Length: 394
Ligand code: LRH
Ligand code: MN
Ligand code: MN
Image (cartoon, rainbow, N blue to C red; front, side, top):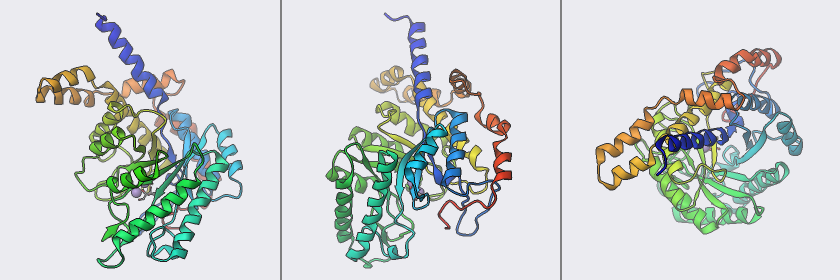
C-alpha cells in the first residue's frame, strides 16, 4: 500500500506541474480602449497599434509566466506584414495565437454575413474568412475562431432553415481551405446583436455543424454567452466527452455579454467549469484557454493579469479536488459528503500555492505588485499618445 504522505507529495507535484504548464491566451482587443455604446473612457498609454498591444501582452506573460500567446482579431489587428508581427511577438517572448474573424462590422452584413440571403454578400464574408486563414498561414496559427452576429430581429424576416443551409455551406467551404494542422473553432452566443433568432445560438447548433464538418471543427464555449442560470459545466462535460470542446473564451457576465474580468462575477462557476475540464482530461494544449474581455473602467494590463490569476486559482482548486474521496462518496450515494469534498477544494485558499509555483518559475509571487513596480505603466503613459479603441466602437 502506498504511504499516504508519499501519495500526498505526488499529488502536490502533479498539481504544481499542471499549474506551471497551464497556458492562457490573452486577447489583443483587451489591451485597447473600449467602452459601451454610451461612452468610451480613454486611458493614458493604451496601445495605438497591434505592435503596442503585443508589447503589453508580453508584460502579462512576463509577470504571470502562463500567458505566452495573444489572439488576434482581423481586421482590428490588420498589418501589412504578418510574418513581421509574428517575429516581433517572438522577440518579446510571446507568440501570436488564435485568429478571430470579424464579419460583423461591415455595412454589407446588416442582414447577415455567411447566412445573408444574397449570394454576393455571403461570398464577401467567406472571402474574409479565407483572408483570415491566409493570416494564420503567415503567422503559423493553429486556430480560426468564428463567431457570427448573424440572425434576425423579427419573425418572418428570413427563413430560419435556409439560413442554416447557407451557414453549413460557408463553414464547409472554409473548412476545406484549412491546412492539416489547422482547426475551425465555432463560437455560439445566445443573442445579440440579433434578437429574434440567432443562427448559432447554442452549443447544440455549434456541435451539429462541427460534427458534420469533421475532426478539425470544434466548439468554443464563451462563458458570457449563456442564459442566466445555465449549467455551463454540463455543456463543458458533454463537449469534452464527445471530443468536441476546442476552446474557451473566458469572461464574466452579470446580465448579458458583459465581457468583464474572468472569475469576477462567479468564481464558483469558473471552478465548476475547471473541475469538469480536469475531470475530463481537458487540461491539455488541445483546448485553447482564452480570455475574451475588455476593460472599460479598470486599468487594462493589471485587469488582464488579474483575470489570468483568477483562471489559475479556479484551476488550482479544481486540481485539488480529492477525486478518490469524491468517487467513493458518489458511489455510496452520500450526497452530503460528495458535495463536501467538492466544497473543501473550492474553499481552499490556493494563493500561497500559486505564489510558490510562481517562485518556482523564477517569478515574483504577486504578479500585479510586480507589474506595478516595473514602471511599465508610467512608461507607456508617457510614450504613447492617442491610443486606439479596441474595435467595438471603431
Ligand atoms: C462576441 C464575441 C466573439 C467576438 C468577441 C470580440 O460577443 O464574444 O468572440 O470575436 O466577442
Ligand atoms: Mn467570445
Ligand atoms: Mn462575447
